Amino acid sequence: MATATPWRMDRQPGNWLSMAPLRDTRRMKQTPPTRPGAHLAALVLATFALLLPTGTFAQAPPAPAAHSIAALGGQIDAIIHQARFAGAAWGIKVVSLDSGDTLYSYRPDHLLLPASTAKLYTAALSLDTVGANYRIPTRLLGTGPIRQGTLEGPLVLYGMGDPSLGATDATADWADQLARQLIARGIRRIRGNLIADARYFTGPRLGPGWEASDLQNWYAAPASALTVDENTMTATVHPANRPGWPTRVTLDPADGVGTLRNTMHTGATHSPANINLYRAPNSPTLYAFGSAPAGSPVQHYRLAINDPLRFAGAQLQRALAQHGIKLLGHVRTLRWPQQDTDLLAHAQLLGEVLSPPLIDVLRSGLKRSQNLYLQNLLQIAGVRAQAAATSDPPPTTFMSSTDWGLHALQALLKRIGIAPSEALLEEGTGLSRQDLTTPAALVRLLQYLAAQPYADQLRNALPIAGVDGTLKWRMRDTPAAGNVHAKTGSMTYVDCLAGYVTTAGGEHLAFAIMLNHYHRPDSAPPAGRDIDAIAELLATLQGRS
Image (cartoon, rainbow, N blue to C red; front, side, top):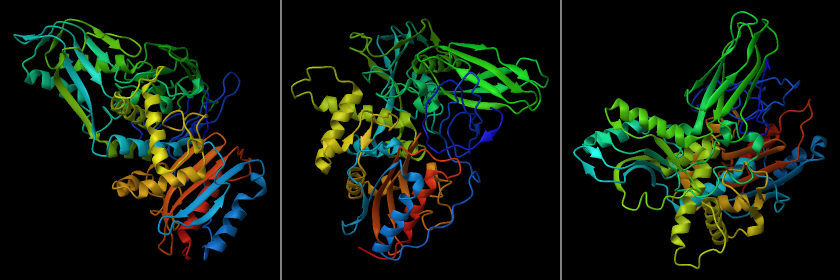
């Protein structure tokens, strides 16, 4: 695993046994990543997606301009009917937002894996159910009386689903903010435990259909009502300068896992790297083994944190101590399905940190294809839907927050005119390989979103070709650059793009381009180039419907 080779943008393949290095060690910025070559003697490489490195692939030649709708159809047909796509499945639909006419379609009613374009459904639900301006609270609750500066009882850190806590400028010092609010109330001592409580969400922390082989990676960090720093940590591998010496591994934060067992050594200079990081699902132990070449640069790996509640509680505990607040108890955690019906019965609000407006949280999630953000937003909508359904007959079986969110989504899709058989979703991110949708349903959703009061906000929250997000390195120096606003979706054998573009003739289009079951030949360009070529054709279209 010594040589660096390029990888795809929001690809989400599976195998948790080894990791690809990151240059951005904590928050996912616009720094291009690298992926090491695979060492297959003992393990299968796990790769995961970030943003495509600049200059990784030569820029594809510009697509010829589409002078008419008839010409557009022939040019798209020429792309998708290439011999190398013989075993693949395409689905495409392009509709004018101005006239409502269909400009092009190819198998628009076939169910296909959407990958991260499924996030468009969650975006629509959260904007419709929760609202663009909603700010997600994280609260400190007191469960006993306050006497002479002492809280007589446990202090509860109560999460309500903010996936951006600690990851934005407004909440980077969230724990200090809460500690200062306690000081302002005159509290100097807590005679009880500090309880990190994530029971605002019910159901498992992992999205339905998330594969066990993904769970160590940052893109499958557990979705939790109490989330800090995107529930991720960074493992840094420090090769020694001499062969045979131990290779040091450090964690940031240091308590990101329960135990680190490192047996990695330093190999000969210029020898192949064999860096392996492994943590079994739900295990607190991270194993580091293999070798790194002597004198080689440090490598950073972004991993999911196994226990975000304990991590959040420990952060707040440190902040309390730094502000002179004495905690006489310990950090405890509460998560579904644990019960403590009396804990919050008479709780009082002692402090609160608010997220940025939901549209800003959503923008960050869509631009970076951040699964945690969208899975949390689905569950927030689910909590809202469950509360609104209290007057209806209760369900006869247990429904998780995700189930309630999907129930609300189906109600929204029915209003939009999308049949249940057109969008079969079981979580909010597209990470599950059980999610299916048709191109026609995606385009109908985009048409609906384009007619809402928040249409411009949502459009600008999508990645922009050649500008930002998962499209930053795509379609540069083409008519699509700065024009195409679209959600990417890619995992192994899947590449999709769905969003908006304005043609050269001034017509506003919604489109969905979906490619499934495609295994790229070694000599062929990435499938994203063919998808981009179709988007570029739409941007150059001069005729109008």
